[in-house]
Image (tube, rainbow, N blue to C red):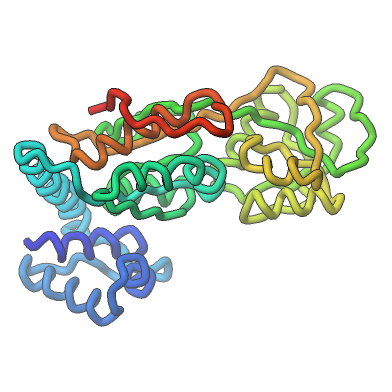
Length: 313
């Protein structure tokens, strides 16, 4: 079974759609269909069936999935071991991140990391938390930066996790809003702009109110991005409860203002997740070490990113 066919198979299994899989792995739709057909012919069985929800794995396909992941990971480990033995530090690293983390955190140090390591080819893919985990498990990305969910690190023993920072959740309101009074129960009577169900930001929002022991408040709108939340709050549609880094630019521009959360301080754990390997590729090892160094407490504006940091295995 050729790695190229297995990578295509995993993309189709993840997307459940030939067209979306082709877009994701940058192949023509006909090429993806041909590769799946070639793999099915080689194995002598169907790997997918069609349903109203899209392509579904057959029992044979579900069996192949974990083996495909292991085969591709073993091939990567072999290449990494050879690179280490040969003293090579060059290579490619594919990073996955939530949009807000990519713009608010990674953009601050990745350009300097690239300049410091010109032989490392960096690729960045922006996606939601669920998609990032799937891409990581399938080997489509090497490392993911996202907010943690309870029990997240237990989702797959093949994944390693490191918390990089604790980002405060803040209450944002329109400019000129009168100083808010009352306790959390008063907030329960107000209207909030939130992200859609299933999003990590929505999970953090729901968790904050659940831990306060009150029902979730009414929603003025459910939207697809934090940027939209900031704009709607600025327009007076409702309040927002989000990680501060997600709206820092709107705060700096004065489009929204921050109010104290009238309860225990809540934070969102920003985590870096990667696949466990017996031998980490040198390029990825350097990237992991740089990330650990650059998610340290805020440094002066003229400080340079650190690169000589002991890296995780």
